[in-house]
Length: 295
Image (cartoon, rainbow, N blue to C red; front, side, top):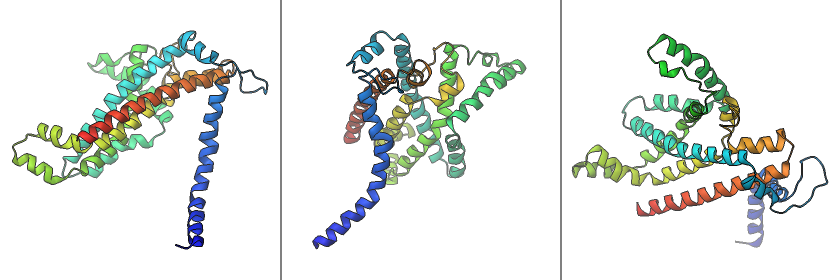
């Protein structure tokens, strides 16, 4: 290929890539690098004068800030529940829908629709359900256990937050699992039936190994989304009662914009969150990739 043609090709590629890279740099790369830099300072986000204080912010966050540690542990608890529940429910729904000969499109639409609603709107809507609808339902029926302090009691509010999150996110994961199930060769299923495998054996020995790529994607998306949860907690409990349901993103937000405008300190907390998410993600990818190879 002539040099002029090669140059023209690279210019064309650059013309397509450059706008996306510029936006990526402006809105993600530069702020990330800036946040990491400010995490070693006492900057308040407003003044141009600030001091470099080394690891003091990190030490304070992990050693002298019980609210941050609590929010971190609460977030980890939320992440573990979401990883298990969201993927199990989504996979079960996908299997049930895929097994139907009719109405597949209808059920896909019904279960995916909650994902199209803004999370903060979902949180406000479910607040009404938990505080107004369920108590009246409990009063008029035998289901008295529904009349609980879903917002005011930390024990119940955690499970209410899970319900809202699952209602909003299961449908999206279900679509990914459906795509994986549709890629399972029918010949393998027929061979398993001929060999006398029952439905459970076919699912465990044929279906699951063939959809490990979909499982990897769903676990990654669930892990990433669960660590970044903010709107559902902010809209439902506001982190309360007290700070019992405060997630790590809310703690960082309050530190930067609500309390003392300690932007440098909030940046240090963000870096800690980034490192934790990175570690979990690398472990999860390594484990799932190994499973894919074994499959």
